[in-house]
Image (cartoon, rainbow, N blue to C red; front, side, top):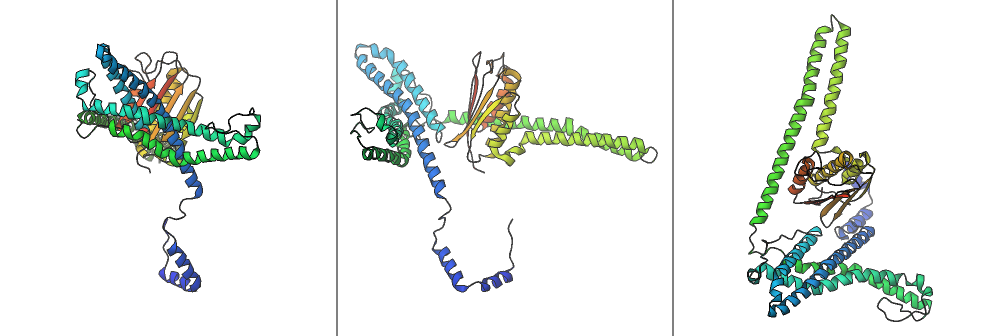
Length: 461
């Protein structure tokens, strides 16, 4: 709340202050650069460590696709050599399908850790059309770069943390090593004294400095070919993407209309009828108060009970629109409350340091509420695990239970039943699709059932 000060009072106070002190304070305030001191050293360290950790994780995930890219590049070389005798021509369609699948996997990986990489129109899988297809040529260029530079950066991203831990902790275990054993992680030198062991530890500190300084840049360098070559180019036809977005927006509007109808039915069939009953009872009590005070008191008691029920139903409807707990406790507190109220023992791990957009938080809350309700009613599970993470502008929600499985099938629908995986799952899909998110459900017979939802964080509140 802003407090306004009388100018006369401010002038009097200003004249009572020592002019020299005021001048010095004004000079100091004027000489201080704007924004200096707003961020503490702790915040800088935490942000630097978080960026380095996220970069190492991105490099490690890129190593996975880089190894597959190397195998695919070797397969391409074998196919090219054997095409002279005709054998390679038979392997070309399978090779092209594998190339397109790996490129799609890389787009998904980059989209999970940053802005979405929009895929172009599906490229051909037959050899002759593929030879003149621009998308296939771009994917081949990405394959060569990712199998070489991407692989090297991925190996460094995995090796550097291991080397840093190994060398930094060397003074703790060097006395137990056999004589002549290599001291450093680069297989150079051996330590025979404490000063040499401390020197190895200093090398470990150097590795840590390299990780903190270079890891984010290495991650960006590894991702650059994929973002530049696998995305739809300016000449690509984006009609499929436009159609997909149109469909998700239409589904969002349908879900919104369904939600409005549900609210209208709840208000009409519940609270409105209760309030009508209150009006009737109060009117009857007014007419009876003179001739039958005891009967009027009974009617007023019934009216009070009906009013309390109407108030409870109004609160239920309000919570269904946007749960107040999200505004009061944030997403972490709201999800923890849902897990605590679940009939099945539920372990929850939430790491969402910043607020997401209100619509995204409401969707995550709805997804978890529907998932836990399904687990309690249909799964027969003994325990459940909920994990929520906010990384790289994405909110990742994972719900797992050890129940009987089969969720999402017509025989064991997720939610209230139905051939489309249950209206519960259909509602979740519509809400997630409205945010351009993704949903995956894995539930083999016998379990476990794993529901994964990926949402954009959206605008910070």
